[in-house]
Length: 259
Image (cartoon, rainbow, N blue to C red; front, side):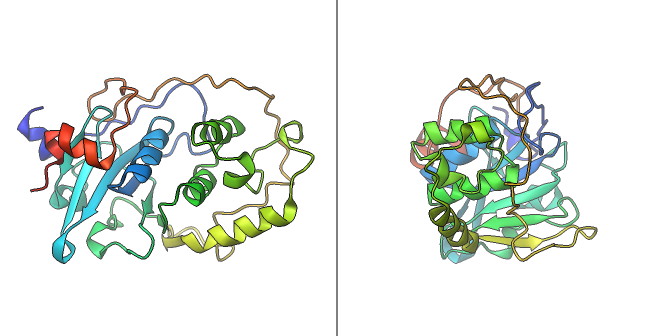
């Protein structure tokens, strides 16, 4: 990869023909800590939704290292390019920031309001609540919830306790409502709004959660998921079906070496 790519990264967001969610026409900048479990979730999301996927690492004295996912490798994004918005071609509609529990990120990592008017945070990297809240944010359809449930080996009711976009023919007769409510209440402590759009006023303290039980879902039952991969936002190449975690990514990809 040419050296110039490490200074200005042009991100082209191309979404597949398949309709995935209500956010299918929105671009989200997804900031995730450089740890294995969070990176896996981030890359799975980026393969399904128009996403500017960035990983971050906080070093000594709050120094920040940023890298962008090309679909094949991680490439360096300087803080200067990040703050000025020179690393993308299509600006994001919002930011979703994932923080490690008890480790709030420094102000320097928050996206500037000039190119990202709204920003939200999930303050845990524990996989189950992370999938629950990310799924709420992206408004997963049933097939998405089902895919994440199968691939992460977690029960549907554990990552989607509200039954969001789950029709009556998908629901179990033994659904435990009290357990569902306890999961929702517990996970909401990990959600916070950093910045709302000026035209948007929060209807409630935790606007991410909606009551989906009154929603009529017309989706037909299906056990198969037919998906087309989202093109690589950096090189327009189809992403390889490879998961690179925090450790092996840094050893395999020269772009991940800490400066």
